[in-house]
Amino acid sequence: MPPQAPILQINESKITLAETKASELMDAGFDIYVRQGDGASDYEELLTDGSFQRYSGDKTITIEKKAFRLDSNAVPYATYLLAKDGIVLGSISFYGAEDQDVALEDSKIIQVRFNKESIEAAKKTFYHSQIR
View 1 (tube, rainbow, N blue to C red):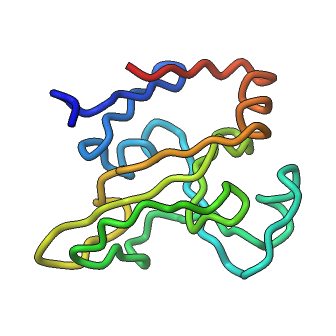
View 2: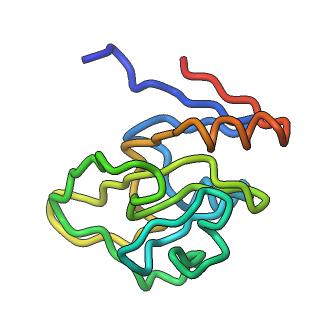
């Protein structure tokens, strides 16, 4: 284990794994999209073809207690996507708590995954990212 959690920075926003909450990203202008169906679509259509729906932050989705699950799916097949300004940046996974279910926006980010398409799209729109 590293002595401290890795920090991912996307432009000015910092994501410290297992510390940063979904609500902090949402407050910084990021959107979280939730998978609505089984089929994956082309990267360019992920947010527009009905496969994913933008989460409004209304506490209607909860992360189950003790649900520390990393998502091994490719970005188009993930349960949750991270986007900004209509650009999918990658997939994202959350952890709530040991003893109770937690609303998605109150859960902590434990994983962010990128793929070739999301990295290329982010670079085209001048998003800069780094891991420290």
